[in-house]
Length: 311
Image (cartoon, rainbow, N blue to C red; front, side, top):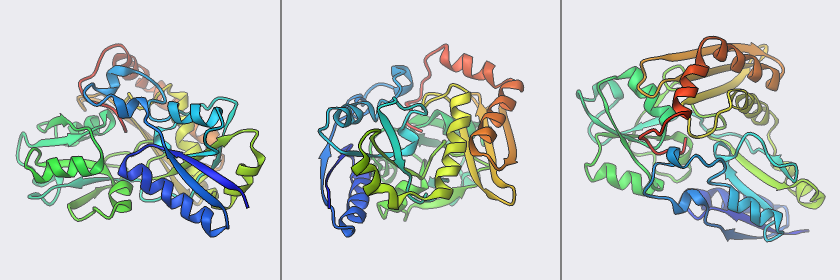
């Protein structure tokens, strides 16, 4: 069996993800090591990432290690991975997706509707900020960066009345105790690829591609391909308020996508079904543009926003 080296960010969640894939590979008889790689997004901790404007800020350095042969595969949160990969890389496997929803975490309040006026809510996402403002225009949305432990510590310390995190991340770390509410995609549409992992390899590394093939989950791959096609068609990355979520339906896939102004005053949403993931994603992206999403995105691209970005 192969000796495989995994490249990963060093956060607790990233290492959980890398160790999860490592364990599956070891059960197949492979010898696996993990190399921790610090990315641009990890180094920039005091500047809103939306102001940095760098695509792949959580993946670039890991891809460099992959390209140079220092690691054989990378394990990413799929939502961090740019929608267009260099030809030298391959999205070799997408394991079965976990819960894609966003979660409301609070010590004192049972749901978002129970928050008092002007409550302080922490989030790292312009996408979440926009949709939260649509639900509750009175809320004070406060930038919140750091790993899951850091964010929870700030919540427990009373800095926030509530925080919003990806349900999958808190579940993977066994930290779901403060979760009070899960938002349906119709309330807060998740980021494209949220809850899914991506295993990236060199495109010409047949040995590693074959080694990870068993973990690929076809329904999850179809859903995230659809979501990423929408995101790509809109020209978006992690700096813009775009949500996209696809799930299985009688016709193949049901895709819901949202583009929202940062203040939540305008939310454009589309929901359609289809049996071809990429065609459906492009169709929905086009429909959003036809309805004025481009104006929102141009406004966001054209100025700095005040909330740090990691969807």
